[in-house]
Every structure is written in C-alpha cells, then in structure tokens.
Image (cartoon, rainbow, N blue to C red; front, top):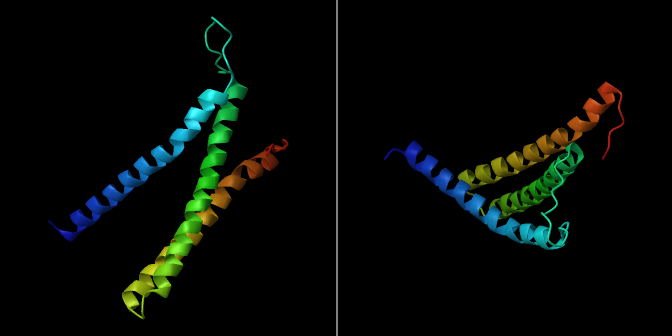
Amino acid sequence: MSEIVLNTMHRLRKFWQFLAISALTALPLTVSAQVYGPQPAPGGPPSVNLTFDGIKNILETVLRWMYTLFFVIAAIMIVWAAFNYLTSGGDEEKVEKAKKGFIYAIVAIAVAIVSASVKVVVANILGVPAVP
C-alpha cells in the first residue's frame, strides 16, 4: 500500500479511537441526567421540554460542555507538544513535529475563541442584548 493510504488509515483509526473514548467518557453524564433530571408524574408520561427555550437551553449546555472539553484537549495538546520538543534530543524532524503541534493547538484555541464570540458580535450588530 502507498504511504498516503497507510497514513489515512492511521488517522481514521485514531479518529474512531477518539470517538469511542469520548463516548465512554460522556456515558456517566447521560446517566446522571436520567437520575437527576425532571421526574415524571407517578403513572403519567415522562415530561419532555420540547419548547423552543427548552431546546435552546439543551443546545447551549451541550455547546458549553464541548467548548470546555475543547480547551482541555487543546491544553493537553500543548503539553504533549512541549514534551515532544523536550524529548526530541536535537532531532530536527521531531522538533518540527513538536512545533507544528504547538502551532496547531494555538490556532485551534484562537478559532474556538472567535467562534464563541460570534454570538456576541451578531447580537451587537442586531442591537439585541447578548445573553451569556
């Protein structure tokens, strides 16, 4: 197989591993949501808040969690790049790989900050108060 195919397969395997670990990490959150969420009336159907505000609150909560998780992962990437840089032993290839990892983490943080501020910018343009 060519190097491109092998590299793509490696990246796909890493992606699926990350997805599986993320799903397993989020599993306790879903259980706690079932235990501590709204309780249905005895003998009645479960209560579901499918109004616009309810859906908006759910999406905002999910996005807030993803935003926090993103920064935690970015911080881990920065620490990993620093570790690779410190353990490169002067090998130019490893030094360049560590530098690229650090730059990618910084760019990812900048994109996350800009994407989070879009809500405030749009609210200012429209002249409505931005709700945090």
